Amino acid sequence: MKRHFLLFLTASILCCCLSVSCDSNNHESSTHDIIVLYENDVHCGVDGYANFAALKDEMKATHKYVTVVSNGDFVQGGSLGAASHGRNIINIMNEVGYDYVTLGNHEFDYGIPRQMELMEELNAECLCCNFKDLRTGKPIYDAYHIVNYDGFDVAYIGMSTPYTINSSTPTYFKDENGNFVYSFCIDNFYDVVQEAVNSARKEGADFVVVLSHLGDEDEGEGGINSPSMIENTYGIDVVLDGHSHSVILDSIIKNKNGENVTLTSTGTKFQYMGVLTINPKGTFKTELIPTETYTKTNPTVLKVIEDIKEGYKKVSEQVIFTSEVKLAAYDDQKNRLVRSQETNIGDFCADAYRTVFGTDIAFLGGGSIRADLPQGDVTFNDIYTMFPFENGTCKGELTGELLLDILEHSVSIAPGEFGGFQQVSGLRFEYDSSIPSPVVYDADHSFAGVDGKRRVKKVEIMNKETGKYEPLDPNKTYTFAASSYIAIDHGDGFAMMDRCTNIQDAGVLDTDIIQNFLENYKNNHVGTEYAGTEGRIKDIRK
Image 1 (cartoon, rainbow, N blue to C red):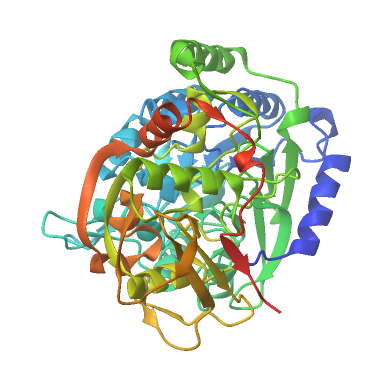
Image 2 (cartoon, one colour):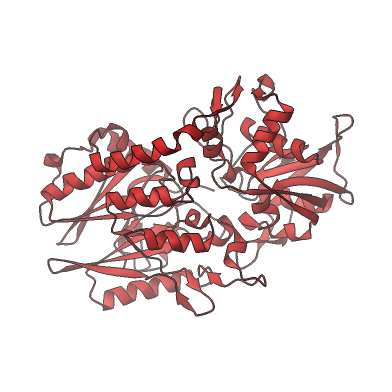
């Protein structure tokens, strides 16, 4: 997916690092200004909460009005969250004292009943205008809340990516008969947003601030993201964004009426803490404070974090294996690779699936691999941080023809990022990203077919007996191993997986597969065989 505003982002990050002060005496706002502290995509990066709470304390000492918000993806993304199915994170956020949150797609990774349970436990108000129950036609949460600040009304509107169903687990949103009973309004998203904005304005809102989990990345032609939402609506003043992990200080985008709207985002895992200053005269200022250099912490929040970590320490620090090489999902500049190209960590994980299940091939989405595995001792915490979703695993059969569709969908957004970009084992293939993707999507943005020239050019399957690669036979049936998220739940839009046969749920998690592979096939040691990649996936674009 292409990033918007790349040149701007570089300048913004540089500006933040050089000029943003963490000293409240240097803030140019007055005591009558409204301060909104914001973050997004913390993904269990819990240490930053103590800094965030300290920033809140600092602002409250000099400003009458301080509101604290999150733009989603907070309960999942690390072992501390996964081990408690999110409760540890909620406990920390309650100690910080949030006012409003919206839902990221990963808030649903533990299932809808658990998501609703966690929102009940969270002291903040959950806002989301486009998460609806199809059985009642009503939204699950309030679309917005209006806060009066000494006569000035600010409306906070929440919204989740309309692609949540596919980027989480589709079966979670269905009833026992397989029918969807929840929706994120993908067909009428802009209308739903505009309705919420109009309602808030009619109710008296002077300013409208959106808590958005849409991201700024392209979702394919006609895709919905925060820039497109702004361009197709009016009446919004500021969008606090999440989902893409982008660092955006204050991008200005024209709305449907040609008016300026501010878009901002803090990165991920508390790279930055956002400060929005609203002047009652109608001006807006955004600051991004680097958490790494903000040394103040709130002692109460810090104690809660330390107590939670201590309770988890014995399990998390257990060494599982040693590795002679770093297994990397990111490069040295922290650029994520695993969603757009072959990686050694992807080869390792896919090999684990194929070897443990004894299948011809294996594949898993790069979006399920969330962290590197270090060189040297690798702990349970490292594995759980790499695979935080607790994905189930399965095996089954597919034809060569079906595999072609799977691979075509996998590279449909390449060289841009896609969580469904498949890391593979037992096969290799080439594709040409200069060719427009021929993948056709249905209304839910799931794979509906191929119409046009294919990107995938050459596919070969490894012969298990000889170890040599042979041309794919479209009419032949191959055994495969994969995550249940892709093969059973059809996550990331892999709807074509319903054409697979003899699918068997293995009843074990992806973390179990890794440990099985290491213990029974690798003697708990990874050598130089994964020092680089093998050329399993090649982009031959001209």
